[in-house]
Length: 323
Image (cartoon, rainbow, N blue to C red; front, side):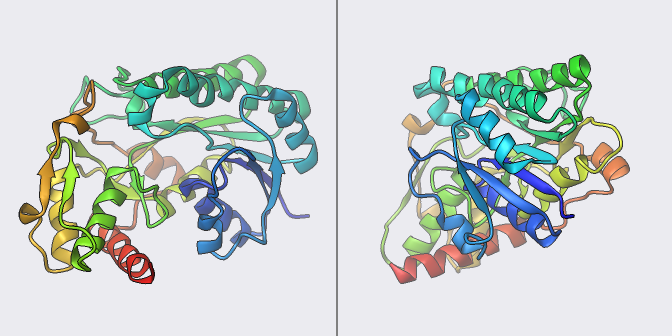
C-alpha cells in the first residue's frame, strides 16, 4: 500500500513542490486548505498536479479541523509548511504571525499525537531564527537571535517540535531551511520581485524597480532541491534537525545584476533605493553549513544561483508576455 502524507501549506511554493515529489514517489497526498485564503491553486496547476492532490478544508489554528484532517488522511507523514511566511508582514501583523507561524505548530503536533503518534512529522524551521548572527557560518549548533516577529515565531515552532520529540517520542524533525526560491515564489519576496521587475522592464511595462537594502546577503537555493531534504529527513531511522543550504552567500545587489544581465540589461540603470523598504531590524548576512545534511541524508543543493535566477526570469518573461 502506498504511503499517505498530509501537507499544511500545500498551495504555497514549498507545499506544491513537495506534493509533486511525493506523488512521483507514489504517495497519496492530502493538503490542508484554508478556505479564507486567496486563490493560490495556481502553483499546483503550474506543476500539473491540482487534480492529483486531496484537499481537506481546515485551519492551522483550529485544532478540531487538524484532528479531522489527520483522521481523514490517515497520514504516515505530516509536513507542516503552513505559516505567515513573509518577514516584512510580521512587523505589521505580529500577533497573527505568532499564532499561525508559532503556536499553530503545537496544534499540528498535538493533532498528530492524538490521532497517530507513530506518524513522522516535519517542521519547516527557518534561517531567520539565526537573525543577528553569532558565527560567520551557521549550522545546527549556532546560537539563535531572531530579528523579526517571524523569526521569533519560527523559533517557538522549532523548539516545540524538539519538545514533542523528547516528551512523547514522536519522530519529529526540523529543517532549518535557508532562503529558497523558484518561479512559484510569491511576488512579495525580493527574488521574485526582482525577476518579475526585470521581465516588465525588458518588455516596456515598467520603468524602474524600487528596493530596500540591496547589500543584505543571503544563502539562496532552489525550492525544488530543498523539498527533497524534507522528504529524506522523514526516511531516517531517528529524527533530527538539519540545516539545508547551499553554503554560498550572495548580496541582493549581486542577485539583481545576475537577473538583469540575463536579459541584457544593466541593473544600475533601473534600481531605485527606497529607505521605506528597509526592515526595522535587519539580518545582514546568512550563510548556512549543510555538512550534516550531506553526511547523514546524502543531500546537496544541485541548482546554482545563476541557474535559479535564469529559471525565474524566463518564467516571468513568459507570464508578463501573456498578460
